[in-house]
Image 1 (cartoon, one colour):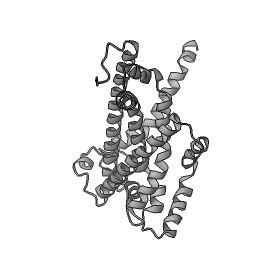
Image 2 (cartoon, rainbow, N blue to C red):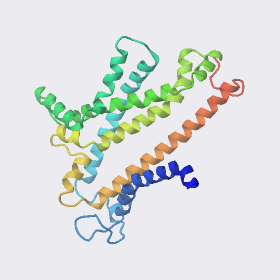
Image 3 (cartoon, rainbow, N blue to C red):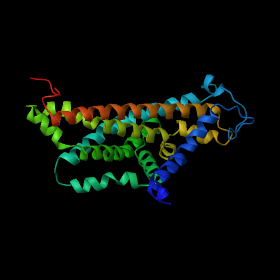
Image 4 (tube, rainbow, N blue to C red):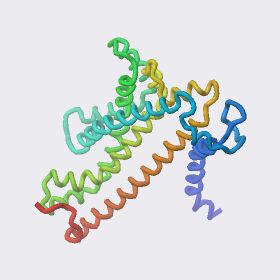
Length: 278
């Protein structure tokens, strides 16, 4: 019992991770399946058809590329705007700052059904044609909140001594931002961008309301579920998951290496030449 009490938190953490990753593992395994019927829900026979003929089903790759395009544009625009907002909220004091902090959380707390229906009514009243542009506008609107929260947490967790060390080395404000602040915040910005892309790529409700005749990947899956989701969908989902996992690991490793280097510069500024001499 003593061993169980001392390892209870770790055991619960492992169980939670297993609970989270079991559905992903099932999707990966079924991407190598050759279903007996039209529904790919149980293992039948090993096959590489889903990978070798990944665009064999009409509409799969088209909707997938559409979601990729929307996700990239939406996440880039939201990351730029959200990062600027996060810097303003953390580094500056201005009238309405508390109200802005509160309003930032509203899109996160608003149900997607309400947001999607409201945006649809807005676009229809403005007689704005529904399609890829309306989806991008809608996605940017709700992604910004997640970007602000992520980058803001990164800024608040920064060690101010690192920027002070840069100023002690006669760095100008622009040099301090370029060589110290931005590299330290960059992992948070990239993480926010990845989160924004995942939210945009995965979104169904808001996209369904504002897509018009455009078919995104989630909308395609929703339509295909009635007649059987093809194996190619599992293969594409596996590619997205593995790509995201690799990117996150690379960002974390590089960020940790930069933090160690800058921390060493604070302890012994003469040991590491962080800034270029003017």
